[in-house]
Amino acid sequence: MTEGTLVLDFGTTALKAVLFDGRFRAVARAERAFSYTSPETGRMECDPYEYARAMFSAGAEVLAQPAASCGVRRIAVTGQAETLVFLDAECQAIGPAIVWLDDRARAEAEALSAEIPDFYARTGNLAVDPVMPLAKLQWVKRREPALDGAYAHALLLHDWAIYLLTGELCAEYSILGCSGYFDIRKKRYDDELLSLAEIDAKRLAAPCPPSVTVGTLTPEAAGALGLAAGTPVSNGMLDQCASAIGAGNVRQGVLTETTGTVLALAAALDGFEPERMTVPVLCHGLREQYLALPYCPTAGILLQWCRDTLLDGLSYAEIDRKILEKPVWNDKLLCLPHFCGKISPKPAPAAQGTLVGLTLDTDRLDIARAAMEGIAFWLRENTEALLPFCGGAERMISLGGGAKSALWGQIKADALGMPVEAPEIPESTALGCALGAAMAAGEDASSPETRSRTYYPGERAGRMAEKYAQYRALERALGC
Image 1 (cartoon, rainbow, N blue to C red):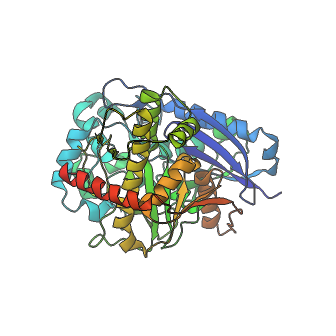
Image 2 (cartoon, rainbow, N blue to C red):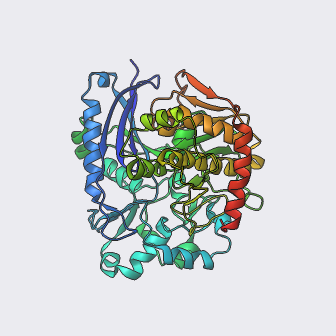
Image 3 (cartoon, one colour):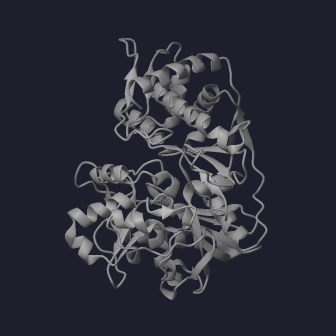
């Protein structure tokens, strides 16, 4: 059996270690959850070494399974983007990591947005967001002088993982696109942006292309995983880029959406033309390509809020079943899903979640269904903004945990007015990362055959078009 690829995928709530054989079939998997703390409202932190323990523990578990007898050709890293880890001069982590969801730097983000009129043309981001390292590092400079004086390196979580594996300080283009200080056309840090935010480029990891080999396993990392020292380590890419590649989103005309904690819409682009585009864009996980990536910060996490706050912790499958069994529901109820602000296609950081159309007959299931519809309407709004730049599309490929819901799949098809295909791709993010590493090495990278379920616009498509018009009118009335 041909040697495979071990992918380490840093999600928002957990790390997944997935081993693919030489034919890119997932043959072993392990997962470790992260524990976060919130010392103040708006803050979210994590022990950097918890990320390290999760990575080595899950990786070792996978490699101890019988399926690992195929051997490991390389390791690749993917996952979240903006989480910050601070190292001292000896490259030991100091202080807590600032998790990407942390929005303590709101004031800094607003001030920087006002100072940078051409931010989109440089970075592909529509505005400076509080979660961006650009704003957070300025916050540290101004409000945590002890930490600012102590750290020698400010790494993104991906960079921290690469360092733990190889001893190299390497960043990656697609992940850096979320930092706020990376020029996605010139493929380098933007000196003016760094200066405005009072950030020293010497404290950042060196930018490197996606998927290329950036080092080999150190003896210490090899011992922790149970592999041979010298095993190549691939730079990987952003999780959304990897998920897109895993679903075949590698050319213009293909649309994928991933409904996880957030909802991201992705389209491969041959180039970035800021003078005519209006959606977030970053470097793709494939060389010389870009990926349009509008996203909604509240998707699966909004349904989780409904479950935990309103529905007594029911499973998502049970929520679907109860909604489908409900003979009558409040079909006038509208939900704006902007519980954590709105990013695209029009940035509105101060936007809030909204429910309109409540009556005395409205129950908790009505609200959960309205939340699903609201996220589907956000998907349509951004699809309409994206289509002129990606050559059109005939269908939407649906990924992530939300793609498991037949109810949500049908709601999206009715809201979009186009077929929604949910392929059964085990670990699509990890798969895309493994495929990208193979392609970068010049190897054959044919993904395995998959089954899929397709939802077509049905009898509710007309009603959903009416509700979408109401949804957009409500957004305009509220300035978002």
